[in-house]
Length: 86
Image 1 (tube, rainbow, N blue to C red):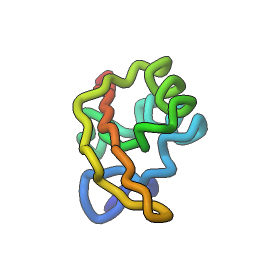
Image 2 (cartoon, rainbow, N blue to C red):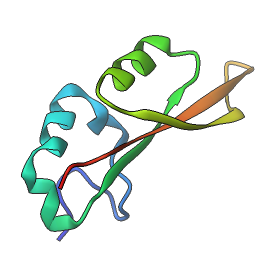
Image 3 (cartoon, rainbow, N blue to C red):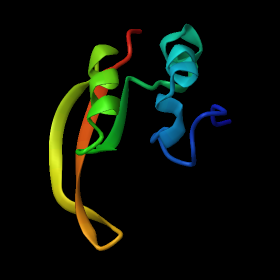
């Protein structure tokens, strides 16, 4: 059985990076499913969100240039990760 905050794969739902979801991930119930880290992506121009995630202990692991297009504008995406404590 999948945890309520996961989809069909080990990737977490994008909305779970919220403060409520983050508290849930950092608590012991994640252990039964064997998750070791959270990997997510943010728009590179969303500095407020990037700053928030870095303050939670996330680290930038890469950038995809022109990964998305929004209103005719190319958007870079930053990939971030955080290892869960077991």
